Length: 355
Image (cartoon, one colour):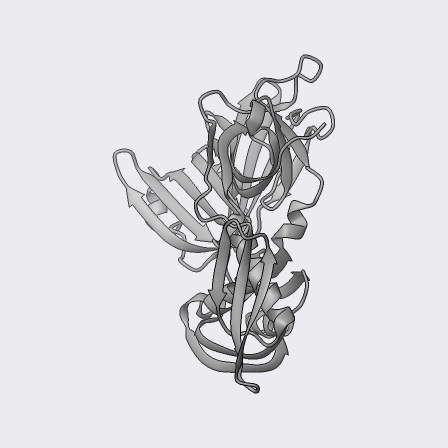
């Protein structure tokens, strides 16, 4: 089953294809797709899609009613789009959104609309539903991730520093346990396209910006990406952010408390947890500070649809004065309907513009 809808604006065209199982029904429903949205998250939450279909036909109440648990594979394609600016313009592109499991169905009449929701997660739902009690011993974050990924036929993509684990108790679902373990060491976890991706967010924040978004397009670059008027919001906070920290743990063999300190003392995060040694304590402390400080300054806005963008990329914002800078994309939501194609970005500031 494939769902397709098309939105045209002059020569530009944006289209959605969605394969259901192994069947392509693009031609069957291209005229009845009301809307499609795809939310791409950098971490924590599963990527998701939502689809609204004009279900006036009786077949949608019978044999065409989708099955919960079915696999969906959407793609966003643009033709003659010509947006993104001189350095990264998108003209013709098809961007696969990933693999999704249908988990929500809703129907309403007057008018007849079928709403379909799906999330990126393994076929085996025990990944996020079945709690396990287990003691992990003499292993590492990557080895634990490899075992859990293999349990659900996921391919592990590990991009970060591995950390040795002497003993770690699990009393949670594999998803929740691995998420918490990654956060402890400053790593992010995401399941998409039947992969388990674990990466170092701070390393990704050091990457070069993938594109630039302006308040107003430069005169010499009319195809530049611009914030839609009235959609921009900005927020910054000092509460819950830190300049340094102190980590205290007990060396059980020597029966002494050991403290590790990093950063400066103006606003200190204080932790009292288990650690294997001082290096482990420092790694946990630095990760906790980075996690707390991420999102101290955030922005949200909508712009012309841009399928080349993705969560965990960085971009440059210009035209907002002191709010300008390099930002890390926390989430990117693509929305297509008969009124057009837009992309909403939620992002956290990495650094101010220099030079």
